[in-house]
Length: 184
Image (cartoon, rainbow, N blue to C red; front, side, top):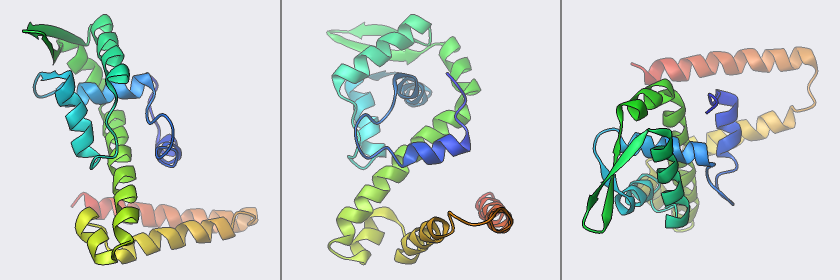
């Protein structure tokens, strides 16, 4: 699996709302994330995705089970039978693989959660912004500011190199400020 950079994360999140949500490698990595603490049955793993995404994404059995089988083939997961059910458990090799790709797994799960919150916001905002805030935790001003930033960048897409450098400096400072305040 290739390392998912921040630019890919941003690009990836904008395409999550239609069509196939994740490729096989991404799904396998998220499955390992869910298996990191305890074994689970396929149906439980589907519920993990459903809960994390506020009902927005639940992989179908036709997608989930081949991904789990591939984890077994790779030696990252093993199964134990309990009656007719397979209980999936991460192997030490799976733990090592997840550790190597931990940031990517976190980014993928953050993308899923963000896209789900965005869909929930749109759905709830039809009723009221208060309902949307209660459902997502996002303030209306947070959503409006994000939209305003996107609009401002779109409006300046033909900017000269000097103007682009000025915008880059502003956004880099702002990004550092946001990340520093979230780590405290």
